[in-house]
Every structure is written in C-alpha cells, then in structure tokens.
Length: 321
Image 1 (cartoon, rainbow, N blue to C red):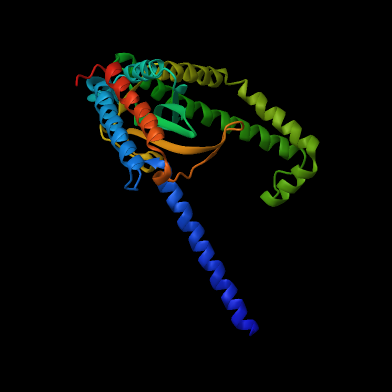
Image 2 (tube, rainbow, N blue to C red):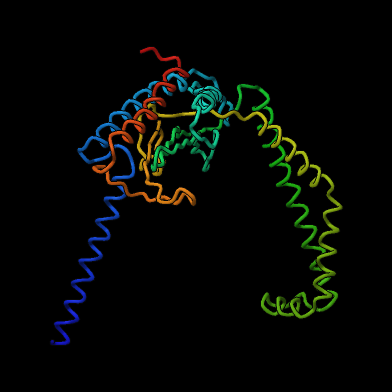
C-alpha cells in the first residue's frame, strides 16, 4: 500500500474516532441532567417530575426574596432609597427544606461569594435501585455595601479629610527635614556633589553608611510625633466607618440554569442529575444512562422520589395547591 495514502487513511480514521468520542461525550452531558432530550417513558416521567419541582421551587423562593425598601447613606453623606431582601428568610427556608427531606442525604446550607457576587445553596442526593439522584437548590445574587443613615458617617469623613490635609503638611516638613539631614551627612563624607548613579553605587557598596543614613532618617520621624498620632487616629476612624457599613442584597426573580449560574447571572436555580451506580461497594458512578432501557419499576421509584421533593417544597414554603 502507498505509504502516503496509508498515513492519510490513518489520520482520517483517527479523526472519525475523535468525532465519535466528542459526540458521545456531548450525549452523556445531555443525558445526565434533567430534562432529558429522549422521548421514552423514563425521560418523560422524570421530565414531568422535574418540571413540577422547578415550578414549585421558583414560587417558593420568590416568597423568600420579596424586597423591602431601605434608606442608606452614600459616601458623600447623601441619603438614598434602595431595596433589599432578607437573607435569613432564604437560609431559614433551606434549613426547613433539608430537615424535611427524610431519606435524602444533604450537605447542609452553604454560602459562597466572589467579591460582590454571592451564592446560597443546598445539595441533596438519593440512591434508587442502581441509580444515583443528585439535586441542587440555590440562588445567586449581588451584595452591595452602603452606610447606615447616621450623621456620624459625615463627621468621620470630615475628620478624615482634615487628617489628610494635616498629614500632607506634616509630611512635607518631615521630608524637608530628612533631606536636609541626609544632605549634611553626605557632605561630611564627600558624596554631596556626586551624580545620582555614582551616589547609588557608593551607597550600594558601603552598607554601613547606608544603615547609618537610614537610622538618622528614622530619627527625624521622632521629631514629628503628631505624624504617628494622625496615622493611629486615621485607622481608628476607618474602623468605625467600616462598622457603619450595611449590605443590601439584589437578585432578579427569574429561573436560571446551570450555565447562567456559572456565568455569574442573578437568579433562582435548581437542577437534578441522574447517574448509574456501576459498583455498589465502591459507589463508582457512570454519568451515562440509557433512558430507554430503565424499567418502569425503577422509573416509578425515581419519579416518586422527585415528586416527594416537590411536595415537601410546597409544604415548607406554605404554598397552597
């Protein structure tokens, strides 16, 4: 066989295999998360059960994130009106939910944040026959910092401004005094007339002189004790100002999927995955499931578990039928 033609054939076969693997992985990704795209008994039953969970969960969480008006103060002392929801209502709801789930295993209520983007969520799991069911309930929102409406905020800002002005004047005096002292010391050792590059080389080579000049420069600061006092006072004021901060929470009351969750969008999210347990001893799992081959008995048991979650969601949120 022609070597060139053989190489081309091998490349083409490898490309085909690669395409098949990619295609297979895409199918696995699609299959493992409800809603399934298959049109069979298992897929239809679980899609219906998940749709019920999603709708009930959305209505339940909307009750917990109802907003209320809040007066806040901006950094310049301006009073503004904004809205927020009560975080504790959401966490209380999740705690009630996981405490009511019976045989479902949960990891508790978790909170994470990246800068101003926050997330509260809980995860649940259940084994049914040889299948592993995983569920996620969460919200993603922004936390924005403001000041409490308190005249002390304006007073602190004013004092900090005064300290900054005074510190600038004091630092100028300190710098002039330090420069004068260093200049005199350099004149004593005959370095005063050197160019910067030459002076740098001399100081680099004479570590003892460098250390002596540093000690003398630091001693100048002691002649201006008010500079250290201003630094201490500034830190005290900043800490007090920090204690006057308040966070307001903002969220869009819309359902988002896993992808939008990862992209940092605000909203309410739930998703469920189903995997095959390959080994009951090791609990090794395979994300692939052949929905067309799952028995009606297993389908009913899994669907019942999901319907149970929807029922509990409705109960703990106080929703009526």
